[in-house]
Image (cartoon, rainbow, N blue to C red; front, side, top):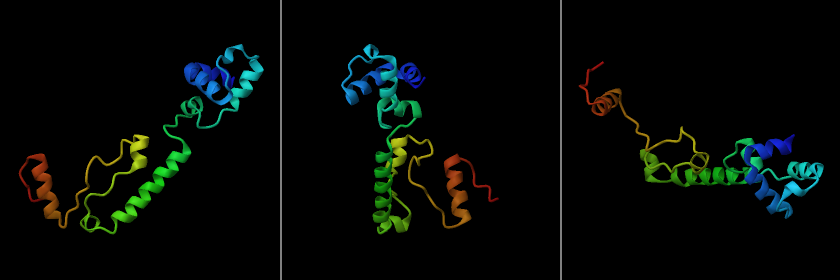
Length: 131
């Protein structure tokens, strides 16, 4: 069943993985039970297993990106930019994962509600209502 699902999901990825991992260029010539065992034994970072699980990147890359993010934040926190709340480094992990929620640009803070309302009015092109 796993072999059939893998083949249906992406036959080319399965063929590439079988060739790379086992040196089998045409897995269709193998006895079906052997082909199924070999397919089930493919590593989690194989093309087909990542496709089947919906993973965009492998666990190792994810952990390295998280480490890079934390290290970048540690260095950034020691800068004048951090004290001003600007130029925060983008998240490598968010970029690799293609997260929609990743900040598109710098985050702006306001010292007073009046500053916020004035900026909002400028952005929206309206008058500052004073609410």
